[in-house]
Length: 254
Ligand code: ATP
Ligand code: MG
Image (cartoon, rainbow, N blue to C red; front, side):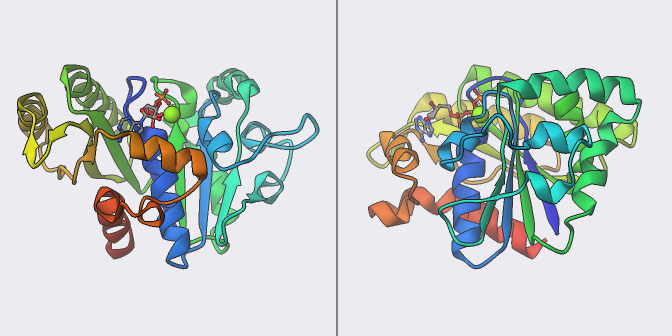
């Protein structure tokens, strides 16, 4: 079982979009996938058509050990794709994780129990240096860093790489950066905009060993696909799906 988190410390960088389409594609290819929503905004849970009921365990109860891990796993409308959902209450888990003294390792320990059930676990992580983020990074074999192809995105990349290096020095992050994904890269016809090109060039300077993967292009089609719960290929936009195919390739060949 491979565990991969989408981490980017600023908001709106494409984390949930990346996890959503990668999860759908992996599941469609027959991999058993668990999508973990580690963001109290709970966008991924919503995209996957799940709503946490008051008496149902979510990631919160799993992390705080009130239930067995399996009790926080739910089926979705997609074959092979399961969700460990979140709701607003997830923010309260920070106190538990910080007072436990080993917060960075708790999600890793919990997921070990379902090692045989899944091929890939994808974690959508809230945009901050929070305890939840520490725990996701601590659990990860791989990290994907989506960042907008603009100045804010480059800054998010620098912050995120700093954070991962700090965690690696503490031996709390033992995985690798699978890749950096430029998000909302604008093209006009067959021409990439100057802004996109310059900012992706800046990303390369900071990336070090980490590869820059194919861009997610700026397009309303992604929002349409999310709204309909479909892959871009199913909406006759196979070209736009390429970045997720590349991620699947990297994840399944690592
Ligand atoms: P947050 O930090 O709030 O969790 P995020 O990093 O998860 O944000 P997303 O929610 O994936 O980012 O994307 C931000 C916004 O961009 C969303 O409203 C999403 O619908 C929209 N979006 C997704 N894909 C594209 C695209 N290719 N072009 C333009 N907008 C997009
Ligand atoms: Mg998100």
